[in-house]
Image 1 (cartoon, rainbow, N blue to C red):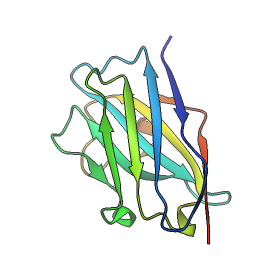
Image 2: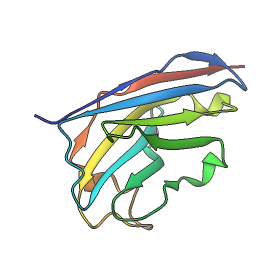
Image 3: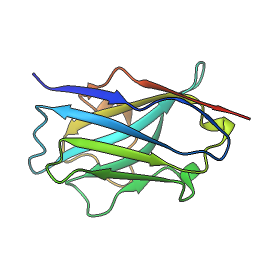
Image 4: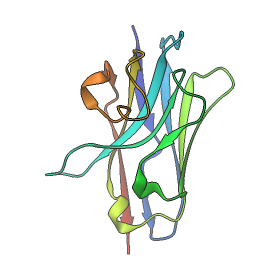
Length: 129
């Protein structure tokens, strides 16, 4: 059974850093596997943060990231990390990782929620001023 488990959320001050982890138990990357980090604030749509995929060479980031975040994996690709620096109050949200195995995830579709087959339970990040 494939599972995604996020961890690493915490309370930090503005300007601080966090590393979130997404453990991908049983996920087979195959030829078109994708793992993406999303976040959601109550009352707002879930937004894509960063995506790493077999469908393209380099990670893709949301415009708001502005070089502050980085998505990486361990060598075995069993854990996907989101390293966040220079955190702002507006980064406060529940952070989710999601998995997909479809060639439809491309530059223009990576943040389309319905393309993702599996979601983690989320981890809370709170940034205080």
